[in-house]
Image (cartoon, rainbow, N blue to C red; front, side):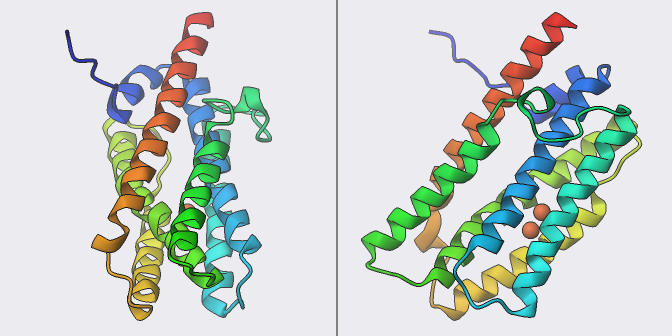
Length: 207
Ligand SMILES: [Fe+2]
Ligand SMILES: [Fe+2]
């Protein structure tokens, strides 16, 4: 049987670059993910320090920056996060829900009730994803001469990853220990991206 090779984000950009309304929906979907990340931090039952407030604020700012990139590509549309404004429907929402449930179960199995550890694990895994995805997005933006940049976001995500990694280390959590969680996230992300790509192709067929 012939192996099915999933399209990469690079393949997608090559298809989307000639259709700004699809690329705009992709940026709006990234904006929605950032917004969900910010809401997730703010909903944590932790004692907020300056670092936590800054982190949540920066995730909201990332959501705003992606929203402004939407404005560069298409005017006066995709104002909000309603389904027609996104790619993949609610896949971004389910990505976060699944990740959250997986981390909760992991902590339950360890009989661990530390809300701070929940915050550190979920955010660390999400920052790992951002550290892979956003540099690739930046490379593709440059390759296709798309007049927006995610460099500022990448710098802030790098700092978040370092800070959260230090927080985990301070609690004696080693990275190999959370490898199963990272593997689960890869599966959720692949499903998210497959939904994004499928919807982009469906929309492309109707334009
Ligand atoms: Fe972010
Ligand atoms: Fe971040």
